[in-house]
Image 1 (cartoon, rainbow, N blue to C red):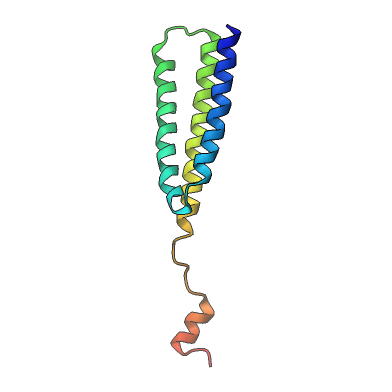
Image 2 (image 1 turned 30 degrees about the horizontal axis):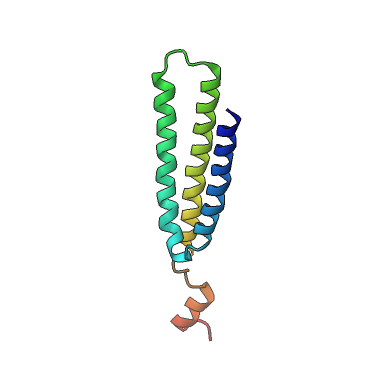
Length: 110
């Protein structure tokens, strides 16, 4: 029992290191598409938690807590991911011209 727990913790720690190594090598141009994919995955987590919570008749409190936590964290990740994606895409939008520059182009400021 303890060896299985130790093996699962080792896998979790190693996957964290591998994930960090892989993500740190992603170029900035690929960050937005990867964030959109992550949003879709977390949307599936939210949907799965809702389906399981709705299908189980009289679930025990432990299952309710786990599903609630999955629902909350999945929702936070989806919303946060879309906020970050929106901010990154806003960096590529052209900025409006300043009012003084527009007036100077029209010849009104001499």
